[in-house]
Length: 296
Image (cartoon, rainbow, N blue to C red; front, side):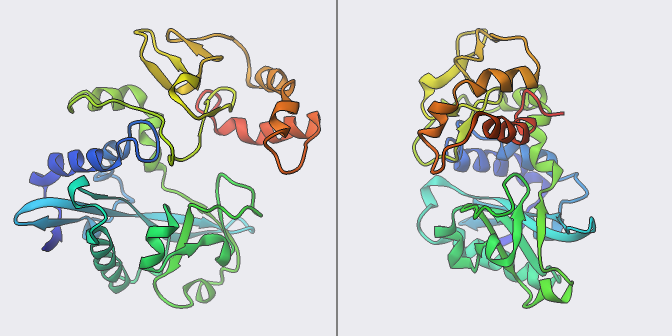
């Protein structure tokens, strides 16, 4: 087993490996291979930590690291770091290779002076590499309430007391903008995606929660989703918002919030504490600007 720096001749092979590794794991399909494709020229990319793992000269794993930021309550922004995607070929998963690659990369990062990492992932795997819930360190996730214990938002001090020595007692993690490149450039992503063999997308148990990017309705099975102009499933929007490649309602975000507020009783059936209609509308005003249809 060998771990080395990625080289330009590896790019397509590594992107295909990343696609195979992430397909239908966290969401229908995946975008991680496109993030990697675009990230190598991003100023946040750390080439010294762009690593591949080989078995008999065959690439079976890859990991990349990136600069990020922590935003403090006083408005200051402190440099931080993250990593991912980390990919292991499906035939080599659950055999310890991912942990070996990550532990090697973390040691290299520590040697470079990288003191603190935040990331999104499954704690049942990443706890073996020293990660724990970021909320235990008073580090909040940018897309969740500050008092939320986000089970997939993890952190680790690679250098002991790094937060204390940098005067950080509480902060909010700001992920690199480059991680959202597929959402920001959907046409470019689709043009890139068709250069790979066709694979079937699907909503599956165990994926991250998926929501309609127009009304916020949870999407739990393929039948919940809308359809594209060619009749294929659109996994971004629900069947009540999107059909045959078109929105079924032409409205503003505020009008959509008013429309959704009428279903507060149904929403409350899933909530630990019931909300009033006004409380539900207030919650949507905070959530809806992050949805694809309303994002500015």
